[in-house]
Image (cartoon, rainbow, N blue to C red):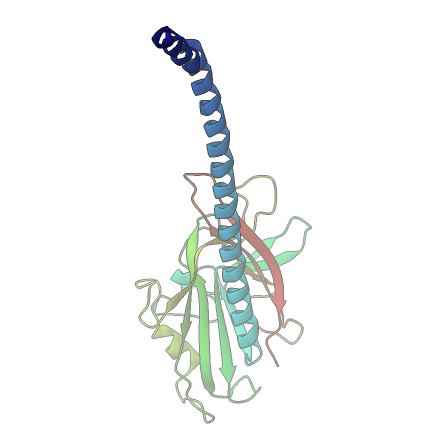
Amino acid sequence: MNSFASRRATARAGFTLTEVLISMSVVSLVLTAVMSTFVFGYRMMYRDSQRLATNANLRYFVSQVSKETLDASEFYIFTDYRSLDGSVDLEADVTASITAVDGVDLYHGDCLVLVTRVSLDASARVRQFRIYYRVATAASTEAPIRYYESADYGASGTATSLTSLLNGINLSSTPAYPGSRVLAARSRGRPYDADPRSIYPIFSSEFPTLTKTNENVSINVEIINGSTINNLLSSSSFNYTISPRR
């Protein structure tokens, strides 16, 4: 009799198939919810990390340009890096004007040359020059921003003309020119209307070179990080005006 009672107690202590299936369903729902929360958190963490990296790249690029304009005596804006092809004409090869949406004529380009002379005299010797350029031929194309810095020729400067110095840097044939480095791996210009193809190059000014009435160069750039496959892009835009010294 004790054996019979023990078997009945054991039967009562077990689970039926229905109870097991219900329990598995509840566990599956809980695990699904947990995994969904984990994936969502991971995506948010990834997005935030990419945004932080984007902002860091943007600040680094803008701070470097703004710092170096403190020493600049003049600037030149070219359409893109192909303008520096070994036969530069500082008057004919600079970028042409584009009428902006507000009707103002501006000069846009993806290649900026900053020049420092030993004095503010336009005919003074060149002490150093710097080139910022995107390795792209269209403003809407994502491309790296590269930077080239010439040697510092000292307080007395160099007797070589600026044209000859620039002709020695043939970016058209060698975009990744020896001595240049990447400031931002992915970038593009700023869009100016709803059409994503309507994008300005990253540098602009009221005139492509320094004049008595024009000392300003603006940066309008989007720095991009993230994966387009996962649609987790993080981009930042910045409009910054720099003023080379006179």
